[in-house]
Amino acid sequence: MKRLWPAFLILGLLGLGYLLLPKGGHSFFGTRLLNPKPVDFTLEGPKGPVRLADFRDKLVLIFFGFVHCPDVCPTTMISLKQVYEKLSPEEQRRVQVVFISVDPERDTPEIADQYAKAFHPAFLGLTGRPEEVQEVARAFGVYYQKTAYRGPGAYLVDHTATTFVVQGGRLVLLLSPDKLNFAQNPGYLPKVVADLRALL
Amino acid sequence: MRRLLPILLFLFPALAQVVVEPGWVRLVPPVVPDTAAYLTLVNRGRTPLRLVGAETPVASRVSLHRDHQEHKGGHAVLGMRPLPYVEVPPGGKVAFRPGGYHLMLEGLKRPLKAGEKVELTLLFQGGLKVKVVLPVERR
Image (cartoon, rainbow over all chains, first blue to last red; front, side, top):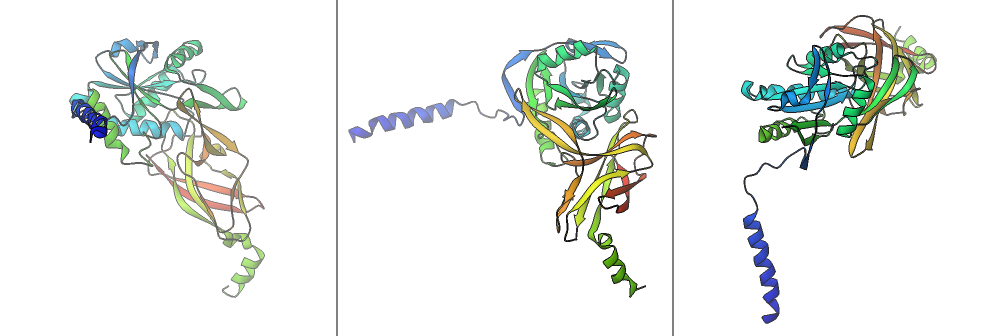
């Protein structure tokens, strides 16, 4: 019996640890960043420069893409629209969806914004000078590269298709393109909405 | 005519070989000059079937693409790669759908409207052409 004492002690400590675990917390579907990284940028919008810090009191969902992208980008943009439409008007006021074009050679700020607004009128499209876009992409760990180059204006772009969620100037959550592919996984929509609600 | 059909099928076996299951064309914002078409090719024949291209009156060029995914810096990097052809094995099928294969309609001559029908002529190796009509859908 004496030999079993250490085992009882360990079980007891484990039980105590379990009781001390925070209860009722939201378990995130997206990737929650434990050390939220401060992020900020200024890019060109259709009506002049837009700074990320302008949306300090909002939850900002950022997707990097390009307009000549018929398959990957619309899949995520349509999902973001579906997520946004699941929110109440009051919640919508505290959420901003931002599309950043990584193809400033072809996409002007006006084109990027028209593209974003075609998915939802409340969305915002931005871009900037190539070196500005590069700087922003670097800050977010976004990769993009031209491929299938057939000439100026005729090429494709590989790009990181993660959606970045920023709150109070810090990157707090990542949503991979798989998690935002509701066409293939309709069950993911309520999970993403729940993640946003947990942050709001 | 009924007696002639088997002879025709014998002469043009490819006619009976390919079946195209209906698909759709993505409605894109009017500012976007390219879109994607999706459908499923079924090969009922005994030889491989190769889709080598397509034509449509609404775009200046149609190319075949497959999505490409790799991981860089912990994130999924997505893109597309042009393909010279898409092969459907005998008795098999290939589904074109978001995240996989698509026909990219490049250089739309005018913005498409939801619900409109787009004519697409599929070109197969050996000269076979199959015309399909796909609806434009927002999804």
